[in-house]
Image (cartoon, rainbow over all chains, first blue to last red; front, side, top):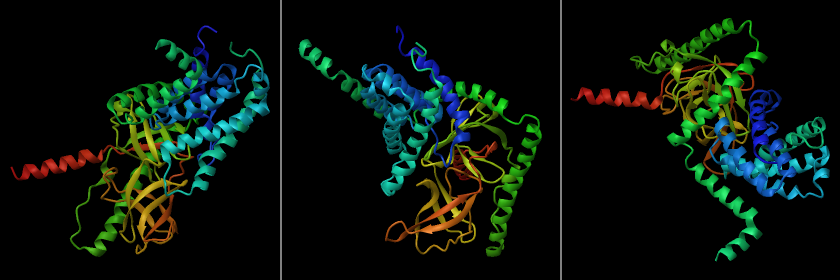
Length: 163
Length: 278
């Protein structure tokens, strides 16, 4: 592909709008799916680790500026998420990783890291109960994102999407 | 030298890119409140807000919008008046020559609509449909007809981002209306809490919590919520009090920006004070 970042970037715009307008209706107590992470992991698995790291950085920057979160907090979280998702971009196993169930499991793992890092940089308080912090800020969000990703991956055509 | 670098790059390029980008991100955290960042943020969220506003109009209930807006404005005014009257009543009991308080009911509230929300367990923000053109400035408090919603954090020409009470970077000085005891309110562990409360405080379940007149962020007395439960976080001299906010943040559609910035008020007072002695 000649301009590998153009399509994910173009898709990011409607995804951010969905995240801001539609997702609040689906959230419970601030626990909501992260559509941007789904997009990031999907494109990272389809490409490679460096691509995912840079894409995560770009996505994070745009999210921080459009959501009003601390500048840099989402950037670090998404950069590391893209980097870790890159470990699942092996050409031999790519197709199996993009099946709905495997994809959701990958997303669950990366979601824990993404939410954990984001929460650490934006809200971690040493006086907080760590288990409660882990449960509320990372696990539940990751489970919700993983469930939504199953739906997304079932709906999206399997191969050659947006290429 | 270049061969060594090439070899290093070939073997560790993924890690080098990662480290480089993380260093940039960490550096950017320090620039969060700089003017350039605020301008860039205003430009980007302003662009998204145009589309969000349109979509909210499409999905929203269009017919009763204006009537609702007017009634909510009246409600918000009444809420402020009620809050002031409660405060006055308590003061009169204590002092016959009461202090002359600011008449918050005469403020020209800026009516606004919530066009999008960023829901998160610790960093919740709203985007509202008023901006610099309407007179909104950074630091202005945002209320609904029920109580305090948050504080304006970033402003573009037509839109503004509001940090809600469910954002842990917002800390407010509050007080119990009944006992007059002051404290610091913060979003923590997924609930609104008054932190570092001395165990000698007499705040009880059901006490009304309002913004304190000592607050340097919100310069008007606005109700925040009701004391719900006292928690002994750890053995020591401090407790935490969980507060249930009056505002249901999941259902807020219309809000009002109170056109006062706390720091400016203080500056004006200080200037007036100085003028008296010139």
